[in-house]
Amino acid sequence: MAFDVIIGAQWGDEGKAKIIDFLGKNADGIVRYQGGANAGHTVILDGKKFVFHLIPSGILNPEVKCFIGNGVVFDIEEFFKELEQLENFGIDYRGRIMVSYQAHLIMPYHKRMDILREEERKEKIGTTKRGIGPCYSDKFSRFGIRVGDIFSSNLKERIETNLERINYLLSNYYKKEQMDVDEVFDFIEGYKEKLRPFVGNTVYALNSMLKNNKNIIAEGAQGLGLDIDFGTYPFVTSSNPSIGGAITGTGINPFYVNKVYGIAKAYTTRVGAGPFPTELFDKIGDYLQKEGGEFGATTGRPRRCGWLDLFMLKYSTLVNGFTDIVLTKIDVLDGLKEINICIGYEYNGSTLNEFPFSSEVLENVKPIYKSFRGWERTKGIKDFNQLPVNAKDYIKFIEDYLEASVSIISTGPDRNDTIVR
Ligand code: GDP
Ligand code: IMO
Ligand code: MG
Image 1: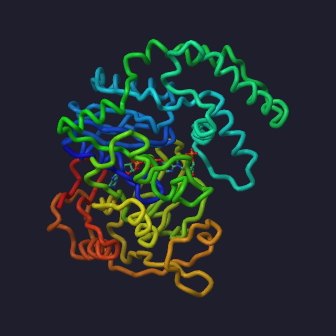
Image 2: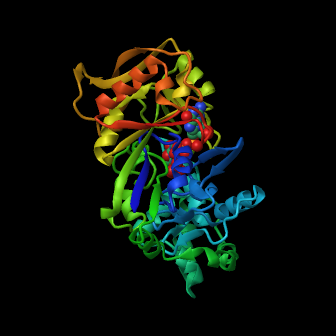
Image 3: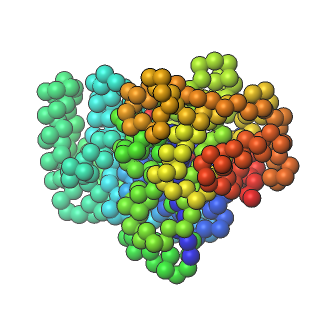
């Protein structure tokens, strides 16, 4: 019996899905606990590529049950699109997916407001336009509509109440076309019967699996750097990818928590706006983008690339209590002559002891680098002993700095390109 949590340690896209799919072999259940269809989780299996936005990445393991927890913001249209994708690939998902009654629904007006709010901002965040911020705002201001509400008799009334306020804003503030209550209602209501077999009380289901000695993995979306509390606010998402989110977003009793895996790329990427101290604007940045295929799985935007930032990762480890670090995409560094790791920040002439909470400060820090010699090839290696000495040194340094063990190393996108120590 174990509840293991998988968390993005950087700014998202660390390769969480590959690791969830890999560890999913030994799991009985996988649960998404926060975020929504802003996530883009890629799994490569037998040369086929699967991109999940909402359905847990463990679904490709035929015995695993998948859950969408209460902390997720649920995009009903995207959900059925993904089921179709599974169907096309011949993956049998029937009886294996449960969506929480308590997850909040992304409504068409949330997506509309996401776009309008972004347009009006001076400091653009570069959201995925999936309605995430507006949906969580409604949740916390208690105007939200939950998955379970689709089956209640007052759904239309709730939509009407919300649209009254939104339509006022649309015409008077944004000077845009209003939204029609019937249209929104019909859109959601249209999914009611299709959705019915998938919904359930995930809190009871998950806790009872754990009580019965089953293994559950929590699948984080995004990463610590995008956390609404601990990330680079306001350039963040609207949920808690960090460890607390795995508890509040599932209702799993915290005493079940066993391992907390921090997934970190061997370098750093970020998509969207916001501070990124180790970002590279030179040929090496381009090289990482090209070799790493660093383009967003949700929006297709190019990801910004830079050196590994251990100062940031140490903060991430502090907040999340990582028991294990999973280092991914080390093969992308293959062939570089020199590789840098950021081990601290300088700001106004002095060295910082703490990761700054202010994005303004973070925009102006100067990374302090330690340089490492590169290596020829790690791609596809499955045994730690076969890694080049310089790659081992790189990993050893990361472990010493973070005071955490790097227990899994990913050397390629395929499930099999994985070293477990
Ligand atoms: P996630 O959002 O954290 O699940 O990560 P994404 O799926 O958005 O992005 C990770 C990308 O890197 C995907 O295209 C993966 O197929 C790929 N990937 C994962 N692990 C490795 C690895 O070890 N090496 C290489 N070259 N690619 C990897
Ligand atoms: P996965 O799970 C990387 C970023 C967006 C934007 C900010 C806010 O694949 O790692 P939002 O739409 O959430 O309001 O956008 O967060 N972002 C991600 N970046 N990976 C993700 O997910 C992301 N989900 C959101 O680019 O900067
Ligand atoms: Mg991603």
